Image 1 (cartoon, rainbow, N blue to C red):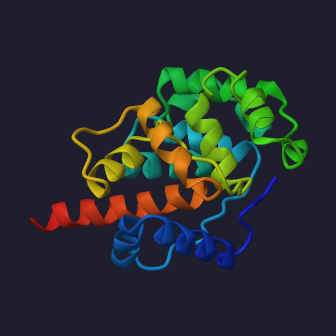
Image 2 (image 1 turned 45 degrees about the vertical axis):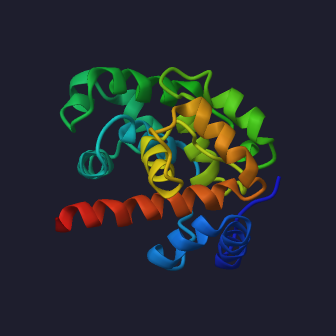
Length: 207
């Protein structure tokens, strides 16, 4: 499995995308160089993905801070915690169930590095609360896989709609079809579209 391990890998993918479609070049000129942004892998990374589900970036950051401070990034602490303990740091009832199910799943985190994207996704999505989006975020951010595109991500969909002047924000199926042409650099395409989305939101804030 090809991975993005260095800043040079990101830069190479960004250059390929800009050469493939000039609109990526336009976005890159506005975002500047894309950061590597690799996260650690393991239980804590998936807890982070669950925390981020269906909430704003600001809300996710605030809840994640409380989750981390309470030690709920550790399997043992989660298994020993009551539902109230977990809800008291800002987790919803469904997310309490998801994080407890994840702690009980005893996933082979070390082995994931040698598994294909499809195999990792299949293993992760067997766990309650881990959908394809969360699995793809883990593959991209924590395992550094080079050709993963979380097509269900609303920010990516909105960014693509603006950059490519689409008539409407594409749904997951349409987004996945659009991104197919960006292989084998779909993970860098996701980084670029996220960065472009931040540019778009900053412009909205100025108005």
